[in-house]
Amino acid sequence: MKITKICCIGAGYVGGPTMAVIAQKCPHIQVTVVDLNEQRIAGWNDPNPKNIPIYEPGLSEIVAEARGRNLFFSTDVDKAIDEAQMVFISVNTPTKTYGKGKGMAADLKYIELCARQIARVAKQNKIVVEKSTLPVRTAEAIKSILDNTGNGVQFQILSNPEFLAEGTAVTDLLNPDRILIGGDTTEGGEEAINALVDVYSNWINKDRILTTNVWSSELSKLTANAFLAQRISSINAMSELCEKTGADVNEVARAIGMDSRIGPKFLKASVGFGGSCFQKDILNLVYIAKSYGLNEVADYWEQVIIMNDHQKRRFSNKIVQTLYNTVADKKIAFLGWAFKKDTNDTRESAAIYVADDLINEQAKISVFDPKVSKDKMLNDLDYLETRTSKENIDALNVFENAYEACKGAHAVAILTEWDEFTAYDWKKIYDSMHKPAFVFDGRNILNAKQLESIGFVYNGIGA
Image: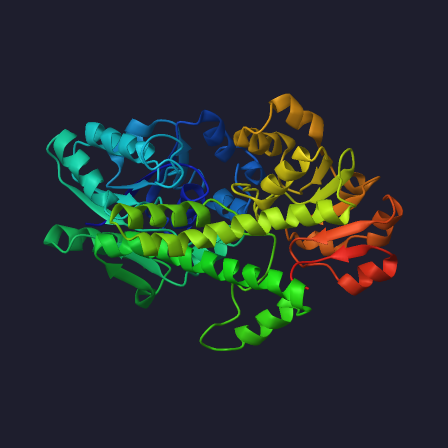
Protein backbone atom coordinates (compact mmCIF):
# COMPACT_ATOMS: atom_id res chain seq x y z
CA MET A 1 0.00 0.00 0.00
CA LYS A 2 1.31 3.43 -0.97
CA ILE A 3 0.50 5.92 1.77
CA THR A 4 -0.75 9.33 0.60
CA LYS A 5 -2.78 10.48 3.62
CA ILE A 6 -1.84 10.21 7.30
CA CYS A 7 -3.85 11.24 10.33
CA CYS A 8 -2.38 11.63 13.82
CA ILE A 9 -4.70 11.75 16.83
CA GLY A 10 -2.96 13.89 19.47
CA ALA A 11 -1.14 17.19 18.92
CA GLY A 12 1.14 16.99 21.94
CA TYR A 13 4.89 16.63 22.49
CA VAL A 14 5.13 13.49 20.33
CA GLY A 15 2.41 13.87 17.72
CA GLY A 16 3.10 17.49 16.76
CA PRO A 17 6.87 17.30 16.13
CA THR A 18 6.76 13.79 14.62
CA MET A 19 4.09 14.70 12.08
CA ALA A 20 5.78 18.01 11.25
CA VAL A 21 8.97 16.18 10.29
CA ILE A 22 7.09 13.49 8.34
CA ALA A 23 5.27 16.25 6.43
CA GLN A 24 8.49 18.14 5.73
CA LYS A 25 10.31 15.03 4.48
CA CYS A 26 7.33 13.56 2.60
CA PRO A 27 5.74 16.44 0.64
CA HIS A 28 3.72 13.86 -1.36
CA ILE A 29 1.88 12.75 1.82
CA GLN A 30 -0.94 14.82 3.33
CA VAL A 31 -0.49 14.85 7.11
CA THR A 32 -3.34 15.99 9.37
CA VAL A 33 -2.86 16.31 13.12
CA VAL A 34 -6.10 16.34 15.10
CA ASP A 35 -6.89 17.08 18.72
CA LEU A 36 -10.07 17.84 20.68
CA ASN A 37 -8.25 20.64 22.51
CA GLU A 38 -9.27 23.69 20.45
CA GLN A 39 -6.76 25.97 22.17
CA ARG A 40 -3.88 23.62 21.33
CA ILE A 41 -4.91 23.36 17.66
CA ALA A 42 -5.27 27.15 17.50
CA GLY A 43 -1.70 27.38 18.81
CA TRP A 44 -0.41 25.07 16.08
CA ASN A 45 -2.26 27.21 13.50
CA ASP A 46 -0.96 30.52 14.88
CA PRO A 47 0.17 32.74 11.95
CA ASN A 48 3.52 33.16 13.70
CA PRO A 49 5.11 29.69 13.86
CA LYS A 50 7.21 30.81 16.83
CA ASN A 51 4.00 30.82 18.90
CA ILE A 52 3.25 27.11 18.43
CA PRO A 53 2.45 25.40 21.75
CA ILE A 54 5.62 23.29 21.95
CA TYR A 55 9.11 24.72 22.11
CA GLU A 56 11.80 22.59 20.49
CA PRO A 57 14.87 24.05 18.73
CA GLY A 58 14.21 23.99 14.97
CA LEU A 59 10.55 22.94 15.21
CA SER A 60 8.93 26.28 14.33
CA GLU A 61 10.95 26.46 11.08
CA ILE A 62 9.80 22.97 10.03
CA VAL A 63 6.17 23.79 10.83
CA ALA A 64 6.45 27.04 8.85
CA GLU A 65 7.74 25.15 5.80
CA ALA A 66 5.14 22.36 5.74
CA ARG A 67 2.02 23.91 7.29
CA GLY A 68 -0.63 24.70 4.67
CA ARG A 69 1.28 22.72 2.03
CA ASN A 70 0.79 19.18 3.29
CA LEU A 71 0.68 19.66 7.09
CA PHE A 72 -2.66 20.56 8.67
CA PHE A 73 -3.92 20.91 12.25
CA SER A 74 -7.62 20.41 12.92
CA THR A 75 -10.27 19.58 15.52
CA ASP A 76 -12.32 17.63 12.94
CA VAL A 77 -11.19 14.20 14.09
CA ASP A 78 -13.78 12.15 12.18
CA LYS A 79 -12.95 13.73 8.80
CA ALA A 80 -9.20 13.16 9.23
CA ILE A 81 -9.69 9.53 10.28
CA ASP A 82 -12.08 8.88 7.40
CA GLU A 83 -9.66 10.22 4.77
CA ALA A 84 -6.44 8.65 6.09
CA GLN A 85 -4.99 5.28 5.13
CA MET A 86 -2.72 5.34 8.18
CA VAL A 87 -3.79 6.62 11.62
CA PHE A 88 -1.25 7.32 14.35
CA ILE A 89 -2.45 7.25 17.96
CA SER A 90 -0.38 9.73 19.93
CA VAL A 91 -2.50 10.58 22.97
CA ASN A 92 -1.50 10.76 26.61
CA THR A 93 -1.10 7.55 28.62
CA PRO A 94 -0.65 8.89 32.17
CA THR A 95 -0.18 6.77 35.26
CA LYS A 96 -3.54 5.76 36.73
CA THR A 97 -4.76 7.87 39.64
CA TYR A 98 -7.67 5.59 40.50
CA GLY A 99 -8.73 1.95 40.84
CA LYS A 100 -6.64 -1.14 40.24
CA GLY A 101 -3.03 -0.28 39.46
CA LYS A 102 -3.38 3.23 40.89
CA GLY A 103 0.02 4.96 40.96
CA MET A 104 1.69 2.42 38.66
CA ALA A 105 -0.35 1.13 35.70
CA ALA A 106 -0.82 3.20 32.54
CA ASP A 107 -4.27 4.73 32.14
CA LEU A 108 -5.45 3.53 28.73
CA LYS A 109 -8.85 5.24 28.62
CA TYR A 110 -7.71 7.72 25.95
CA ILE A 111 -6.26 4.90 23.84
CA GLU A 112 -9.54 3.00 24.02
CA LEU A 113 -11.55 6.10 23.12
CA CYS A 114 -9.31 6.55 20.04
CA ALA A 115 -9.77 2.93 19.01
CA ARG A 116 -13.55 3.17 19.33
CA GLN A 117 -13.62 6.40 17.33
CA ILE A 118 -11.49 4.88 14.55
CA ALA A 119 -13.76 1.80 14.50
CA ARG A 120 -16.90 3.96 14.27
CA VAL A 121 -15.60 6.22 11.50
CA ALA A 122 -13.55 3.87 9.28
CA LYS A 123 -15.23 2.80 6.04
CA GLN A 124 -12.10 1.34 4.43
CA ASN A 125 -9.08 -0.70 5.52
CA LYS A 126 -6.64 1.19 7.74
CA ILE A 127 -3.26 0.83 9.35
CA VAL A 128 -3.37 1.95 12.98
CA VAL A 129 0.00 2.91 14.50
CA GLU A 130 0.65 3.03 18.25
CA LYS A 131 2.88 6.04 18.82
CA SER A 132 2.02 6.53 22.49
CA THR A 133 4.09 4.59 25.00
CA LEU A 134 1.95 1.63 25.96
CA PRO A 135 2.02 -1.48 28.14
CA VAL A 136 2.93 -4.74 26.45
CA ARG A 137 0.01 -6.34 24.60
CA THR A 138 -2.00 -3.12 24.27
CA ALA A 139 -2.10 -3.72 20.51
CA GLU A 140 -4.10 -6.85 21.22
CA ALA A 141 -6.73 -4.81 23.05
CA ILE A 142 -6.84 -2.17 20.30
CA LYS A 143 -7.30 -4.84 17.62
CA SER A 144 -10.08 -6.50 19.61
CA ILE A 145 -11.97 -3.19 19.88
CA LEU A 146 -11.45 -2.38 16.20
CA ASP A 147 -12.50 -5.84 14.96
CA ASN A 148 -15.55 -6.13 17.21
CA THR A 149 -16.97 -2.61 16.99
CA GLY A 150 -15.97 -1.59 13.46
CA ASN A 151 -17.78 -1.62 10.15
CA GLY A 152 -16.27 -4.87 8.89
CA VAL A 153 -13.16 -3.23 7.44
CA GLN A 154 -9.69 -4.70 8.01
CA PHE A 155 -7.29 -3.13 10.49
CA GLN A 156 -3.57 -3.74 10.91
CA ILE A 157 -2.02 -2.62 14.19
CA LEU A 158 1.62 -1.48 14.29
CA SER A 159 3.75 -0.45 17.25
CA ASN A 160 6.08 2.43 16.39
CA PRO A 161 7.37 3.83 19.69
CA GLU A 162 9.10 7.19 19.80
CA PHE A 163 12.63 7.55 21.19
CA LEU A 164 12.72 11.33 21.36
CA ALA A 165 14.65 13.30 23.93
CA GLU A 166 12.91 16.59 24.61
CA GLY A 167 15.16 19.50 23.76
CA THR A 168 16.67 17.53 20.87
CA ALA A 169 13.43 16.09 19.42
CA VAL A 170 13.87 17.59 15.96
CA THR A 171 17.45 16.28 15.68
CA ASP A 172 16.28 12.89 16.96
CA LEU A 173 13.53 12.78 14.33
CA LEU A 174 15.76 13.89 11.47
CA ASN A 175 18.67 11.61 12.40
CA PRO A 176 17.42 8.83 14.71
CA ASP A 177 19.56 6.05 16.17
CA ARG A 178 16.86 3.68 14.96
CA ILE A 179 13.20 3.48 13.96
CA LEU A 180 11.37 0.55 15.53
CA ILE A 181 8.28 -0.92 13.91
CA GLY A 182 6.45 -3.92 15.33
CA GLY A 183 3.63 -5.74 13.57
CA ASP A 184 1.98 -9.08 12.94
CA THR A 185 3.96 -11.76 11.14
CA THR A 186 0.99 -12.38 8.82
CA GLU A 187 0.95 -11.31 5.17
CA GLY A 188 -1.26 -8.32 6.05
CA GLY A 189 1.00 -7.42 8.93
CA GLU A 190 4.09 -7.50 6.70
CA GLU A 191 2.38 -5.26 4.15
CA ALA A 192 1.49 -2.75 6.87
CA ILE A 193 5.05 -2.78 8.22
CA ASN A 194 6.44 -2.18 4.74
CA ALA A 195 4.03 0.72 4.19
CA LEU A 196 5.39 2.49 7.29
CA VAL A 197 8.98 1.58 6.39
CA ASP A 198 8.40 3.30 3.03
CA VAL A 199 7.30 6.49 4.82
CA TYR A 200 10.41 6.67 7.01
CA SER A 201 12.78 5.62 4.23
CA ASN A 202 12.15 8.99 2.55
CA TRP A 203 14.91 10.32 4.83
CA ILE A 204 16.21 7.42 6.92
CA ASN A 205 18.45 4.59 5.69
CA LYS A 206 16.67 1.27 5.84
CA ASP A 207 19.50 -0.28 7.86
CA ARG A 208 18.37 1.91 10.76
CA ILE A 209 14.74 0.76 10.54
CA LEU A 210 14.20 -2.29 12.73
CA THR A 211 11.15 -4.52 12.38
CA THR A 212 9.96 -6.88 15.13
CA ASN A 213 6.80 -8.46 16.40
CA VAL A 214 4.37 -6.13 18.16
CA TRP A 215 5.16 -7.30 21.69
CA SER A 216 8.92 -6.85 21.34
CA SER A 217 8.40 -3.33 20.00
CA GLU A 218 6.11 -2.33 22.87
CA LEU A 219 8.44 -3.74 25.52
CA SER A 220 11.56 -2.24 23.89
CA LYS A 221 10.26 1.28 24.54
CA LEU A 222 9.66 0.64 28.25
CA THR A 223 13.01 -1.13 28.55
CA ALA A 224 14.97 1.68 26.85
CA ASN A 225 13.55 4.30 29.21
CA ALA A 226 14.09 2.06 32.23
CA PHE A 227 17.77 1.52 31.33
CA LEU A 228 18.38 5.25 30.77
CA ALA A 229 16.68 6.22 34.04
CA GLN A 230 18.62 3.48 35.83
CA ARG A 231 21.91 5.08 34.75
CA ILE A 232 20.83 8.45 36.15
CA SER A 233 19.73 6.94 39.46
CA SER A 234 22.96 4.94 39.62
CA ILE A 235 25.21 8.01 39.29
CA ASN A 236 22.96 9.97 41.66
CA ALA A 237 23.32 7.21 44.25
CA MET A 238 27.09 7.53 43.90
CA SER A 239 26.84 11.34 44.22
CA GLU A 240 25.65 10.99 47.81
CA LEU A 241 28.52 8.62 48.59
CA CYS A 242 30.95 11.07 46.96
CA GLU A 243 29.75 13.87 49.22
CA LYS A 244 30.40 11.72 52.30
CA THR A 245 33.83 10.45 51.23
CA GLY A 246 35.37 13.52 49.56
CA ALA A 247 35.26 12.05 46.07
CA ASP A 248 34.02 14.16 43.13
CA VAL A 249 31.15 12.57 41.22
CA ASN A 250 32.15 14.37 38.00
CA GLU A 251 35.58 12.74 38.16
CA VAL A 252 34.04 9.36 38.96
CA ALA A 253 31.63 9.69 36.03
CA ARG A 254 34.46 10.67 33.67
CA ALA A 255 36.55 7.70 34.82
CA ILE A 256 33.85 5.08 34.40
CA GLY A 257 32.49 6.73 31.24
CA MET A 258 35.80 6.08 29.47
CA ASP A 259 35.13 2.35 29.81
CA SER A 260 33.77 1.41 26.38
CA ARG A 261 31.41 -1.09 28.01
CA ILE A 262 29.75 1.69 30.01
CA GLY A 263 30.15 4.88 27.94
CA PRO A 264 29.72 8.50 29.07
CA LYS A 265 26.06 9.19 28.32
CA PHE A 266 23.44 9.61 31.08
CA LEU A 267 26.10 9.75 33.81
CA LYS A 268 25.47 13.39 34.74
CA ALA A 269 24.69 13.68 38.44
CA SER A 270 21.84 16.08 39.19
CA VAL A 271 18.85 16.84 41.37
CA GLY A 272 17.04 14.01 39.58
CA PHE A 273 15.36 13.08 36.31
CA GLY A 274 11.93 14.30 35.22
CA GLY A 275 9.88 14.36 32.05
CA SER A 276 6.81 12.51 30.91
CA CYS A 277 8.43 9.15 30.20
CA PHE A 278 10.97 7.79 32.65
CA GLN A 279 8.93 7.58 35.83
CA LYS A 280 5.69 6.67 34.06
CA ASP A 281 7.30 3.92 32.01
CA ILE A 282 9.22 2.40 34.91
CA LEU A 283 6.09 2.34 37.08
CA ASN A 284 4.30 0.68 34.19
CA LEU A 285 7.10 -1.89 33.94
CA VAL A 286 6.86 -2.50 37.70
CA TYR A 287 3.10 -3.01 37.44
CA ILE A 288 3.46 -5.45 34.53
CA ALA A 289 6.12 -7.44 36.44
CA LYS A 290 3.92 -7.60 39.55
CA SER A 291 0.90 -8.67 37.49
CA TYR A 292 2.90 -11.71 36.35
CA GLY A 293 4.09 -12.42 39.91
CA LEU A 294 7.65 -11.30 39.15
CA ASN A 295 8.11 -9.48 42.46
CA GLU A 296 11.91 -9.45 42.44
CA VAL A 297 11.92 -7.91 38.95
CA ALA A 298 9.37 -5.32 40.10
CA ASP A 299 11.41 -4.46 43.21
CA TYR A 300 14.58 -4.04 41.14
CA TRP A 301 13.06 -1.46 38.79
CA GLU A 302 11.04 0.30 41.49
CA GLN A 303 14.31 1.12 43.25
CA VAL A 304 15.24 3.38 40.31
CA ILE A 305 12.19 5.54 41.14
CA ILE A 306 12.87 5.41 44.89
CA MET A 307 16.43 6.66 44.31
CA ASN A 308 15.18 9.49 42.10
CA ASP A 309 12.63 10.62 44.68
CA HIS A 310 15.33 10.46 47.36
CA GLN A 311 17.67 12.66 45.30
CA LYS A 312 15.02 15.39 45.00
CA ARG A 313 14.21 15.27 48.73
CA ARG A 314 17.91 15.28 49.55
CA PHE A 315 18.38 18.47 47.53
CA SER A 316 15.57 20.35 49.28
CA ASN A 317 16.72 19.05 52.69
CA LYS A 318 20.23 20.30 51.98
CA ILE A 319 18.90 23.79 51.25
CA VAL A 320 17.03 23.84 54.57
CA GLN A 321 19.97 22.46 56.58
CA THR A 322 22.51 24.81 54.99
CA LEU A 323 20.32 27.85 55.63
CA TYR A 324 20.62 27.24 59.38
CA ASN A 325 17.79 24.70 59.50
CA THR A 326 15.07 27.17 58.57
CA VAL A 327 13.85 28.72 55.33
CA ALA A 328 10.67 30.21 56.81
CA ASP A 329 9.98 33.57 55.13
CA LYS A 330 13.29 33.35 53.27
CA LYS A 331 13.36 34.01 49.54
CA ILE A 332 14.77 31.10 47.53
CA ALA A 333 15.31 31.89 43.84
CA PHE A 334 14.83 29.04 41.36
CA LEU A 335 16.56 29.32 38.01
CA GLY A 336 14.69 26.89 35.81
CA TRP A 337 11.37 25.08 36.11
CA ALA A 338 11.32 22.90 32.95
CA PHE A 339 12.50 19.34 33.55
CA LYS A 340 15.46 19.93 31.19
CA LYS A 341 16.85 22.65 28.95
CA ASP A 342 15.50 23.50 25.50
CA THR A 343 11.92 22.46 26.27
CA ASN A 344 8.89 24.04 27.90
CA ASP A 345 7.75 20.67 29.26
CA THR A 346 7.54 20.57 33.06
CA ARG A 347 6.10 17.11 33.64
CA GLU A 348 7.71 15.45 36.69
CA SER A 349 10.27 18.28 36.85
CA ALA A 350 12.47 18.23 39.93
CA ALA A 351 11.64 21.91 40.45
CA ILE A 352 8.02 21.08 41.27
CA TYR A 353 8.92 18.73 44.12
CA VAL A 354 11.75 20.84 45.52
CA ALA A 355 9.44 23.87 45.51
CA ASP A 356 6.72 21.84 47.20
CA ASP A 357 9.12 20.76 49.98
CA LEU A 358 10.38 24.30 50.54
CA ILE A 359 6.90 25.83 50.53
CA ASN A 360 5.99 23.28 53.21
CA GLU A 361 8.87 24.85 55.18
CA GLN A 362 7.23 28.28 54.59
CA ALA A 363 9.87 29.52 52.14
CA LYS A 364 9.03 32.15 49.51
CA ILE A 365 9.94 30.83 46.05
CA SER A 366 10.85 33.18 43.19
CA VAL A 367 11.31 31.63 39.75
CA PHE A 368 12.69 32.48 36.35
CA ASP A 369 12.48 30.07 33.43
CA PRO A 370 12.95 31.32 29.86
CA LYS A 371 10.14 29.14 28.42
CA VAL A 372 7.70 28.22 31.22
CA SER A 373 4.76 30.46 32.16
CA LYS A 374 3.59 31.34 35.65
CA ASP A 375 0.24 29.63 35.02
CA LYS A 376 2.02 26.38 34.14
CA MET A 377 4.12 26.53 37.32
CA LEU A 378 1.07 27.12 39.50
CA ASN A 379 -0.82 24.31 37.74
CA ASP A 380 2.11 21.98 38.45
CA LEU A 381 1.96 22.79 42.16
CA ASP A 382 -1.84 22.59 42.29
CA TYR A 383 -1.69 19.13 40.68
CA LEU A 384 0.13 17.81 43.77
CA GLU A 385 -2.90 18.76 45.89
CA THR A 386 -0.70 19.46 48.93
CA ARG A 387 -2.26 22.89 49.58
CA THR A 388 -4.84 25.32 48.20
CA SER A 389 -4.32 27.25 44.97
CA LYS A 390 -4.29 30.50 46.95
CA GLU A 391 -1.49 29.20 49.17
CA ASN A 392 0.56 28.33 46.07
CA ILE A 393 -0.08 31.77 44.58
CA ASP A 394 1.05 33.40 47.82
CA ALA A 395 4.24 31.29 48.00
CA LEU A 396 5.37 31.48 44.35
CA ASN A 397 6.48 34.60 42.45
CA VAL A 398 7.54 34.40 38.80
CA PHE A 399 9.85 36.98 37.21
CA GLU A 400 10.66 38.04 33.65
CA ASN A 401 14.43 37.80 34.17
CA ALA A 402 16.87 36.05 36.45
CA TYR A 403 18.30 39.18 38.05
CA GLU A 404 14.89 40.24 39.39
CA ALA A 405 14.18 36.70 40.60
CA CYS A 406 17.47 36.63 42.54
CA LYS A 407 17.25 40.15 44.02
CA GLY A 408 16.93 39.95 47.79
CA ALA A 409 17.19 36.15 47.81
CA HIS A 410 18.93 34.18 50.53
CA ALA A 411 19.82 31.41 48.08
CA VAL A 412 19.73 30.55 44.38
CA ALA A 413 18.90 27.01 43.25
CA ILE A 414 19.66 25.82 39.71
CA LEU A 415 16.89 23.39 38.74
CA THR A 416 17.26 23.35 34.92
CA GLU A 417 20.52 23.35 32.94
CA TRP A 418 19.63 26.23 30.58
CA ASP A 419 22.83 27.36 28.83
CA GLU A 420 22.15 31.04 29.53
CA PHE A 421 22.50 30.52 33.28
CA THR A 422 26.25 30.00 32.91
CA ALA A 423 26.63 33.33 31.06
CA TYR A 424 25.02 35.54 33.71
CA ASP A 425 26.82 38.30 35.62
CA TRP A 426 27.03 36.37 38.87
CA LYS A 427 28.77 39.27 40.63
CA LYS A 428 25.65 41.37 39.94
CA ILE A 429 23.47 38.58 41.34
CA TYR A 430 25.70 38.25 44.42
CA ASP A 431 25.57 41.97 45.14
CA SER A 432 21.75 41.92 45.12
CA MET A 433 21.36 38.99 47.56
CA HIS A 434 21.31 38.61 51.34
CA LYS A 435 24.65 37.56 52.82
CA PRO A 436 25.93 34.95 53.14
CA ALA A 437 24.69 34.23 49.62
CA PHE A 438 24.18 30.55 48.80
CA VAL A 439 24.08 28.76 45.45
CA PHE A 440 22.70 25.22 45.17
CA ASP A 441 23.65 23.93 41.74
CA GLY A 442 21.26 21.05 41.09
CA ARG A 443 22.69 20.53 37.60
CA ASN A 444 26.42 21.06 38.22
CA ILE A 445 26.63 23.61 35.41
CA LEU A 446 28.26 26.56 37.17
CA ASN A 447 31.96 27.19 37.83
CA ALA A 448 32.28 26.53 41.55
CA LYS A 449 35.68 28.23 41.95
CA GLN A 450 34.52 31.35 40.12
CA LEU A 451 31.40 31.66 42.28
CA GLU A 452 33.36 31.09 45.48
CA SER A 453 35.86 33.79 44.46
CA ILE A 454 32.91 36.21 44.13
CA GLY A 455 31.83 35.32 47.65
CA PHE A 456 29.10 32.72 47.17
CA VAL A 457 28.79 29.65 49.37
CA TYR A 458 28.57 27.06 46.58
CA ASN A 459 26.88 23.65 46.90
CA GLY A 460 26.89 21.26 43.95
CA ILE A 461 25.85 17.64 43.57
CA GLY A 462 28.31 14.91 44.48
CA ALA A 463 31.38 16.82 45.63
